[in-house]
Amino acid sequence: MAVSEADVQQRVTEVLNRSGVSHELLGDLASQLLWRIGRVSDDGPVTVRVGLASSAGLFHELPRLRTASDSEIEAAVNDESLRVEWVGPRLRGAAER
Image (cartoon, rainbow, N blue to C red; front, side, top):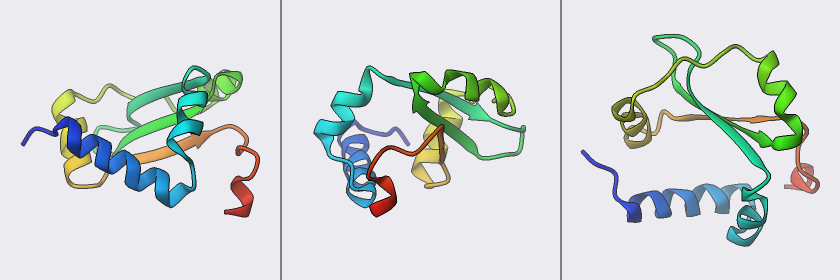
């Protein structure tokens, strides 16, 4: 089953609402973010690692992610098993949420 643009927008909005991050803040941060997507192991969950570009060195300290196919990513989104990891120091104000 294909994920529509509307489904993606709805899920992003839900995650942002739970995290307390506004669309505007996400837009402001977008050019400063680095991300990787894949699996730590063949049978592990599809994982998205996200962090500020200033934390790029920390990405290299983590286990390498193996490639996940588009269909694996789509399945993880559909069954809500997609794992998201923040790499680096937490953003200011995140501890208050």
